[in-house]
Length: 195
Image (cartoon, rainbow, N blue to C red):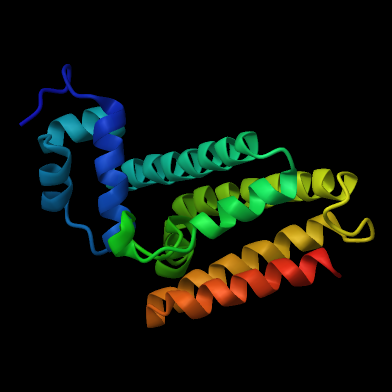
């Protein structure tokens, strides 16, 4: 087992994130956390606090990774809308293609937990809201660049993007029908661009 003074925080958080993302908060046992993180219970609690505290840290890590991926995609493309659509396309993938679940970890959290886990729910809600605001700012840029109609309401369009991606990823989880999901996503992009 790892010694608390020697563990790599990023590495163990990444492993814990993938475990929670795959199984959810409630279905993940303390034993599984210990095994996955290769740490003793006392070391885990000393480093991260409770299971809920650890889970919240993994939610933030998940969101930070998504934000970093979004920023990288935007940097790779000259136009905001092109970068955003490439990022959104990358969110549609079966769990067998390198992701622990087809579902967004933040959305999975909101679906799984009730108000008795309010602090954790609030972390997930806050991270989703940050993404929505970021999408709105990218939409503003895309309108300035002429890739989206100037009359689009950026906040409402950001909400539509969130709803679309949550729905498509949920459908993918239910059916594993990647082709239909990708087709629907492309139609959604066309609808926004020609609204």
